[in-house]
Length: 109
Image (tube, rainbow, N blue to C red):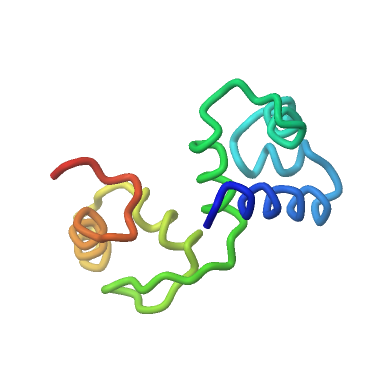
């Protein structure tokens, strides 16, 4: 997805939510940041911001080796959960997510 696609996704999210503040809360950014991105004056890491927009609002599906066909938002949610030995599926997901090509969070492991 290009940055222009992500900006369109942000505009659509704001339109559907009815306010920039609601979208900002979902993204974990300030309403000011959302406003600046939309106006093209954002001085922060635009790629990071727009990646968060894609992760939060995209209806794109990815193939998870453990869960099958899931949304990108669920992929992000699952891979960011903390490791837990209390659930065998969490252990398997943790291990699979660390090596997954869909994991944009991963560091060199």
